[in-house]
Amino acid sequence: MAETDRFGEDLADFMRRVAELKAARAVPSGDLGTVLDAALFELEHAVERLWPGLERLTADGPAAGTSATRDEQGLLRAVFQRFPLPVTLVDGETVVRRMNPAATDLTGMRGGYATGRPLTVFLTPADRPAFRSQAAAVARGEGDRSLTVRLQHRPELPVRATLTALRPGTEPRPVVLVVLQPPGPREPLPRGVRGRTPDLAEATRHAELLELSDAVTISLLTAPAGDPTAVLGRVADVLHGRFADWVIADEGAARPRRRRVLGPPDGPVADVLAQDPADCPLVRDAARCGAPTLQVRPDPPEGFGRDADGAPVLVRANVTSLLCVPLAARANGPVEGVLSLFRTGARLAFSMAEAHAVDVMSRHVALAMRRST
Image (tube, rainbow, N blue to C red):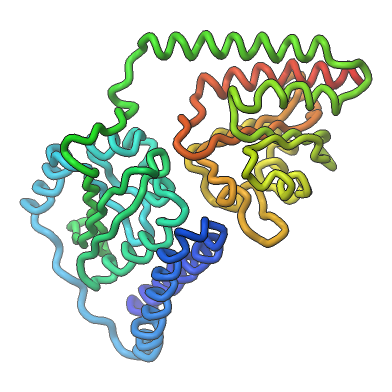
């Protein structure tokens, strides 16, 4: 039974990685070589491991490995706390178990936030399938691996990821130790959330939010009466560029209609405009539940639906953070529409303060739309 369970888990994990490979077909053509290598590796795994495993299901599995000693467990804890390089402990599906302080500084995320999330969400879409495939192979006991990846918030700097298997005494299966080697000792690394303190830059950002709120208010007061679509258009014009790389405005809740899409000149604006908002899970949930959504390194990639060719919109647009806010005049009130904001590439992710500011603006937008009808 244990052998059957292990085979079932391996097969389920293989199917998830194949689904991720399908989603990665929308990456730029220059990155398709990495995706192809990952696909070939998965095919090799299916032939050499999964099929023989199916034939061995009638046989008893090997005896379980011995547990690690207390000294080894203590050493592992010491590595996580004191190792000078970024170190992360993940399972075979790359879900983060632990992350040391150096890793939180490199990724820009607190360890508590990262725990329970796939480490792949911190990587660029083109590198995710290859990393998942290599992590799964290490977890299966196929030896240590090493590959170059890029962090989504700093895609211009390659990071060397070294993966090795560990067997903690409390774990029934091996886990993967990931060491991330930054580009070089003299290359400045982004300061993580742990080290951030209020400073002049934050005060400046607060002032910018006040100016943005003032600009939105003026646009609402000067919008033509009796035209909710014009209200959405005015707000989208204010937010685009200065606050978000993409602004998508949808009107209505039960049957939302896409009214305005503003994005980068080289982005798939026409494809997003042609979408049915009802096919976008994030928009649909915001309209039905009336609750805003803030995501950093959005996952899954199908959260904002797919284009006409079946490619995930979030992957094609290289979205690194998003806000999806229902337009309602009051809490639990009727939803007049949904406003979706994307940031892409190396731009700073939306903060909680920015999400709160947009939530306040959304109530004013909803009031303006109701007064226009």
